[in-house]
Image 1 (spheres, rainbow, N blue to C red):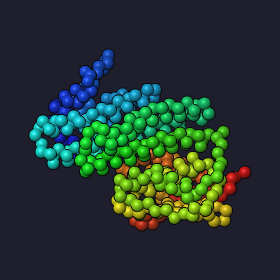
Image 2 (image 1 turned 30 degrees about the vertical axis):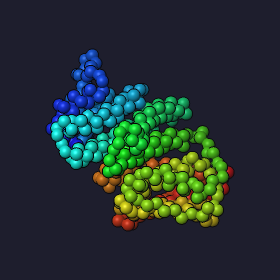
Image 3 (image 1 turned 180 degrees about the horizontal axis):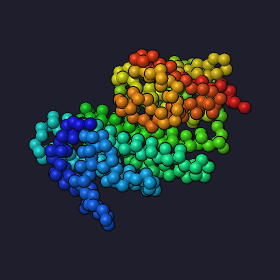
Image 4 (image 1 turned 45 degrees about the vertical axis):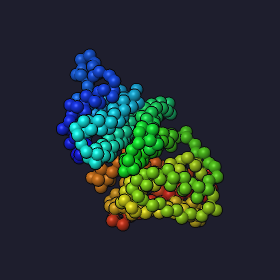
Length: 370
């Protein structure tokens, strides 16, 4: 992730670090037996994240250690605050360096995009590692409940802060921004919404795997379910200029667990947005056939290889193509889709022709399973 922002930081490291420290309003941190953790160390760690896609130094700087899960929310929150402060620090340093307005705007947009990417990757890394820890823990209800509580508490607070920054920027409360900066702001909002869904998915996964968990059945309008799911991913779709179409009868109703089915649908839709090329169309269809409700989501992305078809719904599975393209994700989304469908007495499936997109389908009984 090298670019204008990384080059500017490297060339003006001393001054950016000084301004950044002033914005923090505190002296460099020290701990007995540890090296000073000051502005230059933070800037160096950020440059490593930018130039080498390595979050290790940044996580070490903020003491984000998975062996010490308690108070991780505070450490992640501090990391996000520090990253956010780099934006105004860079802007001030650029002004002092005599960059013209066009160059300053270009630098600001590049900084917003890169810092949002780092913040998102940091949050995804923490979420995925904590999810793996939950899975590895004792499967008793008490242990699962404790680990779930820790995870939710430690992830929701920094996400709330990140989302607040996006809202403040979009409303102009932090100062007027040029229209062209709206793309970066939308990126912050979309990334935050994606992470909120991941946190909610972690919570639901723990409950879904609990043998004592019971589904809460209620009447559901299929059209309402689909429109709600589409609305949840609307910002991400807008960011990629993707159009989402809906084809469903407003007369279809069935019984199911609304919260779990909404989660499954938004996971499929989010997956479609992630893999769709900019400006493409995602189609969502809903219908009833032989006392079963079908929901199918089709995208125009690259599709998936035939050898991946049987593995897509496995827990933590991510295809080689996803890893190669550095598509963000925890490997839990489609596993949750399958689990929700099966808990309802239904199924989940995927179809694809490489290069011609993919279609994911959920099938559940239209009446409550007894």
